[in-house]
Image 1: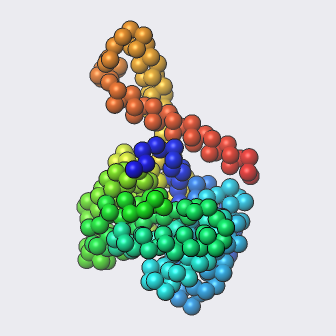
Image 2: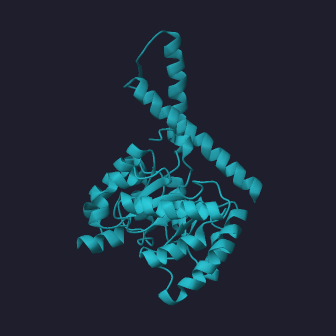
Image 3: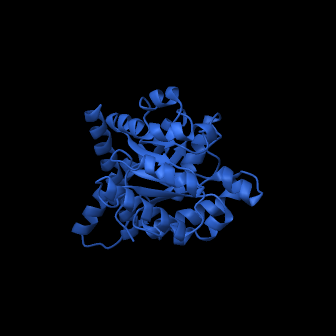
Length: 304
């Protein structure tokens, strides 16, 4: 189990980019998304799959040159999936998003294919990480085992629309709460990134409602989310970043903690609340994330 947050990338916003849309590809590099996800699945018609695969490597290189992390969402049926992996494994692609993951065995099989491709292409073993999408009852049932399946695992996310279809349920906060929390717990237990929010990624027009979903997601413990429209990117980036008032409070709390240590106190009162080590650890973690975000933004400015 990986317990150090510094081992995980900061990917608050992961923007889908159809592999066959020149307009969206050109627009994507101007967005403030932390990562760009080249899509070979739902946004690409069956007759365009081969064209999309051929485009992955050059698109990925252009995204990396723009200072973006690159992910590829592949297709689920094995015959399509293997071809997608063969087209996607390269230096510029950091991770693969796997739709409709049913169990841990599926992850292990994909990992075996990735190892062969990395060896053939002179890449470091383990270079290509995995994000598992939980989109049917079988995946929900095995979510903990999926999270623990392989060292390549990086994140978990619930695919709201596909899960709703397979479960014969509506897409709303009642139906999606439990599977999302199960994925969150499984991700934290395995030291992965819990991605997502309680709702559908397709609902992007009501920005105020979307903002509230992201705020709720962060309070629940999620670290980032997929997005299908550029208007969602700034909302997600802001929502998953520490807020100014939280940072100010954490810094003041750490100063009070240092004074308490000088006085030999194991616990102390601060602004009407009893403070002990778990509270201090939360403040430390928040301030560490602030510093990591600063370094990420600075490195991107240098690249641009």
